[in-house]
Structure formats: C-alpha cells, structure tokens
Image (cartoon, rainbow, N blue to C red; front, top):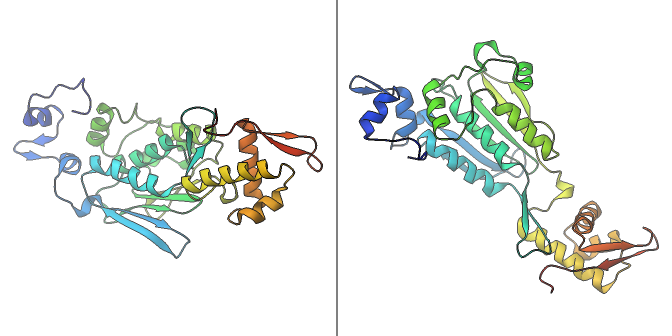
Amino acid sequence: RRNPEQKIESTQEFLRKKGLTKGPAITNACYLMFCKEQNLFTNIQMGYFASETIIKDEVTTSNDIITQVEEAMEFLKKHINKEIIITEQVENTQRWQYPLEGIRELVLNMIIHRDYTSPADSLIKIFPEHIIFYNPGTLPNQITIEQLLANDYVSYPRNRQIAQIVKEMGWIEKYGTGIKRVCNLFSEYKLPAPEFKTLQNGLYVKIQGIPKTTQETTQETTQETALRIIALLRKNPAVTRKQLAQTLGNITEDGVKYQLDRLKKQQIITRIGSTKSGYWKVNKAEGEQ
C-alpha cells in the first residue's frame, strides 16, 4: 500500500503473487517483513557513544524489517548533529552532519542483505564524529570490497524476496547501485568516502562526519552561537577571533573561524580591510527588515 501503483485485492492474493507463500505456509522472507511480534531474528542494536567506553543512549529493535528502516533512521537523526544556517530568507536552511539519503541507503543495504540465519545482531554505533554499521553476512558470490566500490560486479541479493518487495515499494531504484550512490553522496557532501571491510563473517562500514572543531553539538547551540557572534561584532567591529572565543566560552578559535566564514559566505557579515587592521561590518541579520 506504500506504492499506489500496486493493486492489492487481498492479503492472500498479494502473498501468493509475490511468492511469499508455500502452500498453507508463509516463507521466511514473509515472516521477517510482516510479523507483528518482536523476534530475535531481526535484532538491531543501536547505541550513541560519548567515547569508546561511555554509552549515553541505547535501543534494541526486534520488529519486522520494514518497520526497522524507519526506527533506525529516527535513532540516527536523534543523535547526529543538525546545523541551522542563518539566511535572510523567511526560513533557515538545515545541514545534517551526514547526507541523510546516504545513511538511509546504508540502513537499507544492512537490512535487505543481512544474513538472517546468523545468530549475530546487526549493530549501529554512533560517535560524535563517526558512525559504524556492522551486519552479519559477508559479500555474496566472492565479490571483493574493491569490486563493490568500483561497481564492478553483478548484483545477486542474498534475500531476493525482500529485495524485490523493497524495490517495488520504491525504497531502492535497482540492484547493485546503492554503494556507488552512497559514495557519490558523501563526495558531494565533501566528506571522506565510507570505509568498507569484512569483519568476523560480516560487513563493517564506517562513515566520517564533519570534524568536531567545525561544528556545534546541537542545532540550538549552533544558532545561538552565530547570533551571539553577530551581537559581539556589532558591539566591537574590531574584535579578534581569540577575543570572541574567550567571550563566548563554549567554542574554540577554530570554531569561531568556521562561524565567521559561514556568516561571510551567507553575506550576513563583511570583512573590511586586512586581517590584522580591518574590522567587521554586519549587513542584515536574521529577522531584520
């Protein structure tokens, strides 16, 4: 029903046409996609870590795998940073720490291609500057990591019925293009390419976000810091980065530089004169007429 082009006359007819039944019984794929009760076969452990040893939030989902896609995305969005970019428009623009479309593609790949016969759980570990995904099940048909990244292989999904249903839902475009799309999305976002490797009979993926020195920890502090900098520039146009960092107290000089460069790019402030002897001019801040 998520795809309006799919006509469903009845549950039984839908399952029969999609090959999700065998006589009076359902297939494993049918159970994994549509079961109501939580089950151990689909466990995904998700955690947010302040450091390698300090965990601040954790959730285990054991729902049907269709529901798990959204559950995983909600947990990820809860714990990755979102920057508010101040503009002269009515609404501010937002930039997430990672390209959400790329993260969603990784989550879909993790769930669709998982080896559900393995006793191991899938893992999502979120750190301040990177995220790790681990999935039971190595690459099929002796595909190498090099071939995967070069898109030099013929796709053969481990779970064909699951992949077909997800494709018909419109969640994936076609087989074998997901990893290439992920790499392109991270490149467009000016982030390092994801790291892929096989680990303990599974696939390990690590993605790097925006460095800590060039971001605030939450959207509220990002916006508040930018507005405080604008106010300080109005008060003292000749103020230095060091003085701004000392006055603000919650940001480094590198963080101040990042904020100033961002405000300059948005034409909210202008640097008049040289770096040493010049001063700052505030043009039009958010909310001004």
